[in-house]
Length: 441
Image 1: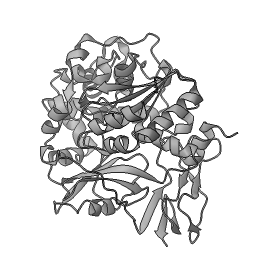
Image 2: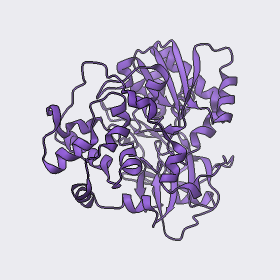
Image 3: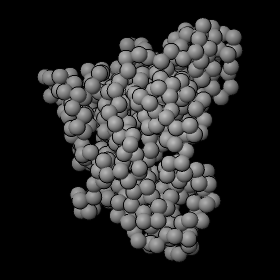
Image 4: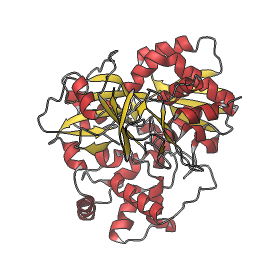
């Protein structure tokens, strides 16, 4: 009998709301609680809201499959009460199911951070450098559980829900084939309203800046936000890292507001962003001898720099650079032995998503975004071989080969952590390089 872990592995399911950790590895564990993360806390995003309203029963099915596989006795759906259609859909789907409950989250950022949602829904604090598994929890995005339910039925991941919003004529949520070019999705939203624009892929806070609309939709990117090239967020992200470092050296006033607002600090982690700036950039001693290595605890949510810093300094960007340098050097942090204790300040430190939208200059784009029943039918898709944490997939098709939708086109390397990929449209393989290009036939 094929296990759920094997079915999820075959289907190419990865975390749909984050870095894309292969789900087969995450659910191959024993836990007592499974959390479906429907917080969708990034401003302007609506894809998870629509998915929950349309496919709550399938999300619940995926949760139950994972609960049975991991031995979990409790399931929790974490979402905001303002998502009324989604709440109503889950209440219908959960009728008579006492083993799964709804937990309402505040309309605050970053309520979708896995450390935050685990604490808000269970009261458990994930240790420094730890994972939800360390406190007996599997936490995944609602779309991931939907994909797990499909995987159990033998359906691989070939599409995802995606928000197309910002400076477009008709903001919309679509279910689009993996590999669809952003340009095609923007066209489906009526085209851009700005002649010269940039793209924020994934959200305005933690998303990636791009000026290339030919880039493809991946399993992990839930949104493309079109912004005028002159928008403050675009100008900020476009600053070279060297200039960012110079700005911190010149203007950091050591006010410690970045620390006071940090979600991980507020959960009791020994993370003090203002001291990291002081130590890394000014050569001054760091208390308790931890040094800038504590930057590995940063979730890079960007609240410190984009919301609270009076100098608008790129604090999370500096932390992220330190993290990547430490990883490249082979440095491994240690989990703290004791359980962190959330700080009292946390209970009065909530950053409303509405306030955040205003601070980011996004009010003109904060509109209702409908779901379109019409699925895009791209003439060409480019499916990247690396869409997830771990190793890139290895192609198992060649140029000129005809493929069917759902056919396996890239396999996990032997003995590696990774994910399979499948053809998202039927057609002919045109190119096999870093991405497999398929032209519709």
